[in-house]
Length: 298
Image (cartoon, rainbow, N blue to C red; front, side):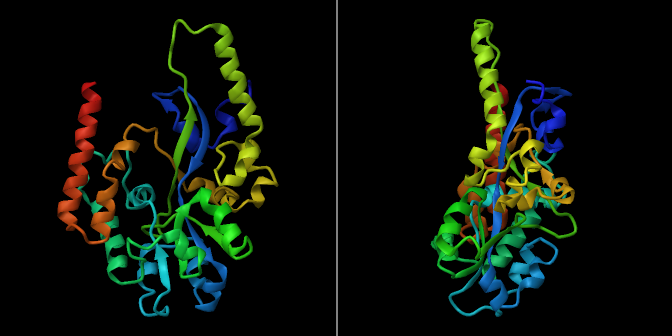
């Protein structure tokens, strides 16, 4: 399968399967929480200026305080730990270098901004179903998975919604951090050559027929799809339709990716004010360090 090589994939995604210069897998797909927006509400409330640069920042959301009618939210948060990774990188951090202390500024500052936006009263409360609020026209922006585009298209109408980059810490350092799924196969001296060949054939088959999967909102890592005119019409292609957008993409090699989101509920507790910032960050750090220690010991 000669096409399954580095030059066939986005550089960031090939980096995600590479350790010490050697590839151990094949990129499969990318996913993340995107910012969806209701075109009619953006026009109604004269908010196009927020989208002119392609980025929606936390500060821009916070600044909508008092500019929207009661009962209409500027933004609904969703899956904060996943979305937070773009904010971490936007604040100058990385998963590879900044898992030693989750109380440092690259974690603290984005968390403070998220909390400030919520405290300003422009973000939907925790007990509001974000997807339902957006789908019923009660939110201008929504932080939803790239896979939500099908449901939102059916609910509001495909011509009524659009997708922007992930929520940004700052427009000065935009980052779209994507989680990445890969094809991996454990070493097994007892595996027959026929099984290995069958596995390779299947990987190649999915690679060549990936477009069959695209309508659910997944993002392809392969130039074969990204440069396909049919793919470029899809809503999630906004992340990859230009070289500039492709350069914003960051991924992790999963060294620490799972541990960073281990304290799932704690992210929400901090942002929605159930615990103090300092207490929450310390809890996140303890959970992450504990999981890393367990993994290293095993």
